[in-house]
Image (cartoon, rainbow over all chains, first blue to last red; front, side):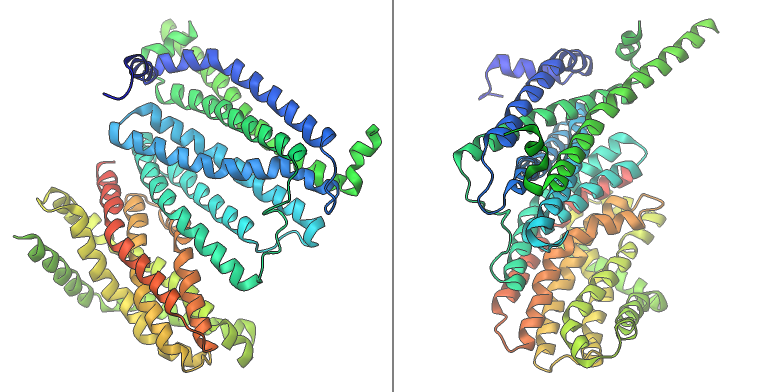
Length: 250
Length: 55
Length: 225
């Protein structure tokens, strides 16, 4: 607490109170949604209209503008989930638990999108829907990790206990992800020789890079929007008996 | 570039537009379903409270 | 009672309990042998094919056998309340859990190791890869028990924890599968396998130190919940 300015500390303290969180995010969400929509429009305009076709892959490479940002988000959200889980475990902050579990579904969604678009991109490039390429394989394992988190949360009736279980699992997962990633990469170079993936390192031009980064930022905002929407729903369901939730109705 | 060319995506229309379409659907579902769920939940809660008051 | 005494006492107790339920203990081993027998029947008894797939088959079967045996790690202690005594004891829970894992590995992991040469012969594995197979099992199966202990600790309180346990634990087993399977495969073609074995040893030591901590936290959670 010594290193954090007082006003910031107060902000977080207030945010940790459920009714405050609910009204504050309610006011924040339209803005976040607007920023997401604008950034997506700009990114897609740049990516689908302005950027030239790739000299090797033609227009099929345009899947990159959702594939790569989704893959980034899938990892990013897992880390956020583990951090939120750790905060929830150590300080018993209910909102951290809710942020954690709300992130899981969004992360699983992005992982699924990364896999599906990877496959759709791979078909014209490799000639098959699925190649055991390091990137896709790691992404598939990540999806299993997410599904494990969601299944565990669903299996435990008491949601506070479930949150603690999920937090432990997410922390174990986040420690293991680098090991899994490294082993899969190692396995892949061994079995397939030099990687066949063109998805890995496309020689990227600035006119392609800018829309790509714009989409990456847009997806960050999407994550905030979706996670907060889920968190708000989860929050009022958990606090259904409290006064402030009853106050929402009047 | 005209619109027809744009939608054709150099012959890769199926792959590109399926990717974008499914992404849109998934993202929409993840963000909008909890909002609907919340509305229904609040409505149900309001209903319950009304009944409680009557009793 | 000192910590080391408690550690040894738990191992001794679990081994005695396992000895009294010999038939139950043999089940994972039988499963292991049975699964491997299924492969030649399903794939056809082509020597070349089986030989090429042997490292993967043995390791996947070991993975599944280890996973199925996990349930017995905390089950009886959870049912009869011994786990609560562990939590209340003055010793750190993670160390007591480590003792239980050691005993569990001696009962379920070690037999897999001992029977694997026979299975290597079944699948026509080249002779020079059998010692490597034993090394990978020696280094790898304890990791399976250690990582598995976290999964069981999380699900021991659930009535239908079995399927979820598989979903939680199997993705985390992947690095062990990759390095161990590959070491055995390389040994078959006479290539050096030092790197793979070193990595497996590193994973084992890391798991020995790290895995009991989340397992202890998860177990406390399962007991309170």
